[in-house]
Image (cartoon, rainbow, N blue to C red; front, side):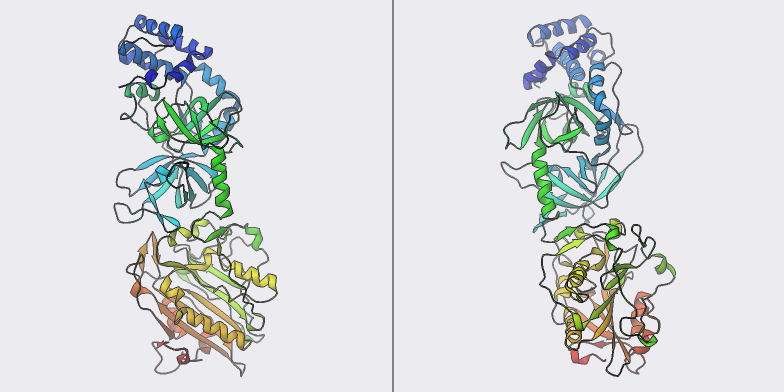
Length: 629
């Protein structure tokens, strides 16, 4: 095995030129401090002294292997140490005065960064319970390395999906911001999806960007504008793992004291940045395999200047420059952090304060035309998701422009949506690029995001159709259209169901077209049947059936309410590939109430088939002239 001086003579030479560090090395070599290398090697202090004197004079350690290896280990342990982190701060032994002094002025800034570095954990992977390091660049976004992300994710079209694990389910990925030595506390957050993995090939950075399921209460690591540090020193924060195959195990044991896979801070120096268009910088901090994905910090400011991705122990350590990281994150921001053609937008809870929502008196002023929102009782009522932010905190009704939604906490889908459609002022704006967004009034963890829909035949099925609430003045109509692209308004529907022009989608067109042509006012309620049936996929139970209730006023002024049911269960057996048949039925409203647990109050009295003998089950709608109005 090659000695470290043969792998990287420049590193030891750099330490030799550092007067302060050499004084501490001298003290260690003289045996006045109990360094483990002295104890384990069983060498006399005099032998080490001769090796050190030769190094001090010429820069070369004695050729005798035992003396040379031990002397180098001590030099590196003092010159390029790796400090354990506990309770979000680093611990420096009392005999490491030099590095304690160098790190002290920016300790607070360094601790801010330490707090936002975590270990990537895997559940279901065939080999690894964890992989490497990652760090926050936004409250819900982390960066790590491409070669790391490829262990658990793979491309699927223009997106990325989690690879199947040993149990056949997608690998579950999270980040734990603790994993500290002799600290039992955890701070794990699930990773919802992979936003970006850099392509393979020359000139491509080793970087990946991941989205957390929810924002965390930790400050993202601030990033410097450039990769040249303000002072002389840098530090790497990450999780070094035992790596005897590629590294000198004796030296590694001495520096890391046989404590691996726990969070550490390792100080050192920047070696080379390269030209302005370079994507890589080099540093000499003590790192091992698990350090991939670590943040490289400017000790003078506590700001990130790079993303460590590899190297050989104390030989050549490489990191992606911060300029490259910034450029990639800016590009993701411009495309709203997806590669699917489905972009995402962000809003604040206060932005929804003036949304009117569904109006129960929309169809007319009479008591007969007053249609309140459906209600739930018992366990289903307790399962309603309440707003946790914004001016209507505690309410179970999410109001949007011309429609409202009530969400299930347990299923992360709507129990129902309720929309008003005004045929007299309908507008049909051209559909632009979809801009999906989480509703900030409830936790992101209470909503099914884009990761469910990547690489399969599932659509984000609008419950309130894009065009249904799009009426009124132009600004009002456009806002209504935008509001339909909330994840709260989507359910997983097979593409064949959602895009079919002859049944479910055709029924929606039929309702809207007739409303438009006849200048009708219509109220439409829609939702999934949230029972125990369905297919479990990526941790979500996919509903087999969907329902719709349409209420309008007849020409004679009386109310009409018709109910419809559609099943996708027959082709959910293979979400990834298969298509299959589906059918739409007109059913009594009582049947929808039985399936969903919803109560539509007295609306069933306006159901034309609700009290008609022979219509107790359903009417298959194979053509729209079969609808009983």
